[in-house]
Length: 427
Image (tube, rainbow, N blue to C red; front, side, top):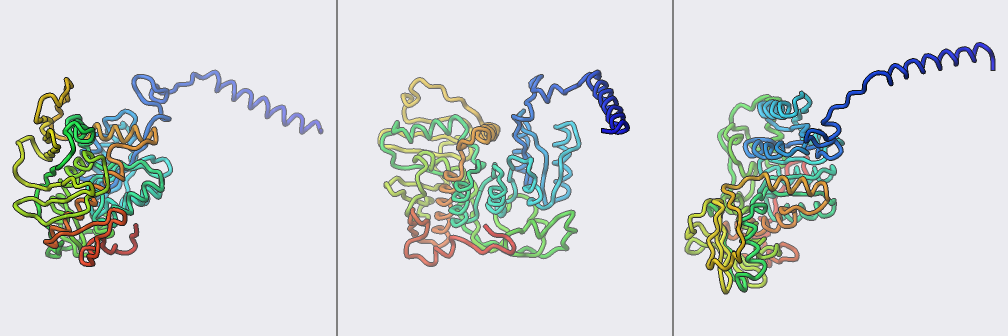
């Protein structure tokens, strides 16, 4: 080795050594949050979350997520510029930084490798399509309901979630409230005797076909992306009224009405009461204010508007051979006999907070276990609602094959099992 080379290496060595000494001499400051001190959750234990379609309901859901110390909310996608700005500000204020990213196309959000889970709170037109895309992108998801627009979507969604192994929580938050859970437990465990009837409140029994509103000037896509808002639904001209409130359907097809909206909550609880078996197999049209469906074992699922004990919204009632229970969003229970409590005290949580449901979801994301509102349970309840809505629309009985989820010898009903999706969207 030459002298010059040796001297050069020595100079480099000394320079490097001095630089290293300077580094080691300086104090190393690590934020307590990075170490999990002061009640903070270390990064390795956090669930990184993005939001898709964070409007009225989504804003409430987001609040439930932000309450959890192990949530890091990093991105929002919305077709409305005003909403993107508002949610970014809320997230940045909460996180005390300016790092929340905004997107107009949810596929860009799903492409991010750092995001573990997504909150899907778009209008129902988008729920299933967005959830399918999220599952294929390897994301877990909390998806508001109704999760599907028809029976075919329900079947595909639960099969996809099962195949991809993603954690899916439908926004049926009453499954994580103690009074509803206790009522369902009484029914499932035989405390009411052999179960005979389960009752759901549909909050309106009418089947409608979606239509067009008067065309208005379509805004710039950066302000409101109308094309993305419609997504898989059939095209129709812009009308600002379609952007406000809760819109079931933006394209052609059968609209769910109350049977699918509140029904997907109440029927979900009835499904839980019957041990989450497949949907009923027979559906009669309404008679005397009641729409009756029957499970394979003869238990009746009854949609009814009136005759409820005043226990708040979303009431359910379960009747067995020896007892009954009724409850609702007041948090109170009414029982055929006080002995059904068996000395237990059931917490009364009024209204229907989603905090417990969100916590259940996050815990399952970490443990890879099934949440209370998992895809199998949610989609079976949705199938029951869709089938009841078809009987309501046709005005006659329909019979469903529980293995294929197709109507038996009924071409007219089977045409209502699905609908075409607008290009380029696929399930």
